[in-house]
Length: 291
Length: 317
Figure 1 (spheres, rainbow over the protein chains, first blue to last red):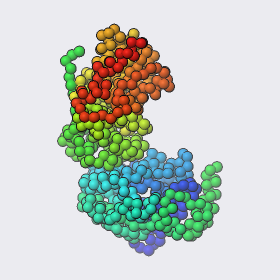
Figure 2: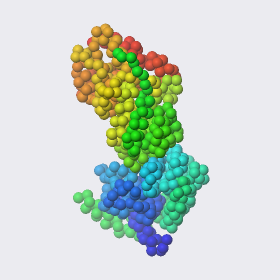
Figure 3: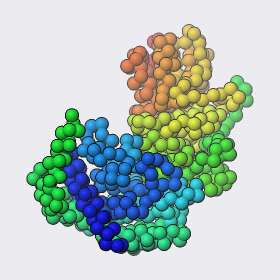
């Protein structure tokens, strides 16, 4: 990756994190920790990898992205707005009555959301069905999906892992957002899911471990997936991330799973990102928007 | 009555799928290791590229079905009712129904007529719980002829459909040449202007209702018998018009009396035209092993038992 690309991606990632925090502050609820751990992979896929057309969201040969860990919806919403599926002004309506930006992604309300998700374990199966649909129609699109590491505790994930390998869906790339935390504690202490790579290998997948908050490593993961196409084996990327990434007081902190920042906290967080001035602009725009 | 023909609704399903498969390349079928019993294996043999055995993993099967439906397929998903509804209920709600996807859940071996396998395989709550899900349509055919038409019709209905089939061969009631199925429409099989009681039945109980009605006719009590195979949406218009003309409605279903056809009838009548209703069904009990006939006797579902139970009530009318 050249330094210019990296610079642009870093800038985008910073803006996305800023908007996630502002959205959650305005919504006064939601999931910052997992959104901040997942954002870099989602951003890279939409900005650098996937084929899609926001003007034609149902373009048949588009690449698909399915956020199985639906509670990281804000991360998906900021990216979909940025790539042009809808106005960024909509971000200010997150979780409000009547908003297409539901607490968890709703395909019936928002363009770019391929399927509704939120109930853990289900998105990966739906992604499997889409990958199978692609094979059936002899279309060359890719299906990217992201699940949480805690989500691996759902039995359905392993049913899906079996079926995706069984039907040789090498057009599917799974990112496991391995931030090591779930609501009640660490994944190891609540219900150990490790070793993740050996489990997927045993199920017939190609696996790779990366730092999922590093664009160069995400790039190499995508290269790895592309090189596996034609092998008949699906790809699982164990994406080591930091929950609450880039905000010092949120990083690796359990309590930031499902709580929105308060005013002083969002100010502090934005200050750390170097864009504290954006809060006033945002609040002004919210006022205008409400009118 | 002409010489009675017997066929299972599941065998009709197998036939209907073959026809659909030939007509429409978008039809895809999934099963969870029960393809020989559900009769989807017939489709699988004819169209191996469009048939997917998902193994004994029903939750994932529903998700895959959702993904295929999103990709533009009309997906028929089958296994026994217990594993097609009660196990993956939340997947049906959150992956399929919430997005109004074109997934047709055609479950076989519903009710206690599963027989010898016993209570773990006898789904008697499936209609009740599915009825509570928005977008879901629920059809329970009375015989093989109507089952076949329903399965075909389901492919033309947008969104999720549940069709409840059963294991045993049952009497054929309809003539394939003059039976038409419409979503939300009941079929009046027997009518009389002076009828005092009406049987509102679905599935295997329609035949039992016809038999009970014969018993009453022999005693000079004329009756109405209606096949309410479309449980959701329910034919409210016909139901209310029947209630207006009669003094007692008897619902009959091979399902718990909680939440199924009987409940749907009571909900409608209590709001629109309050009328006395007796619900015949399984009275908040689990099933058990036995032949279907023995179980129908044990749980009071055969015409003889229903007749006995109703006799007292009806004398007062």
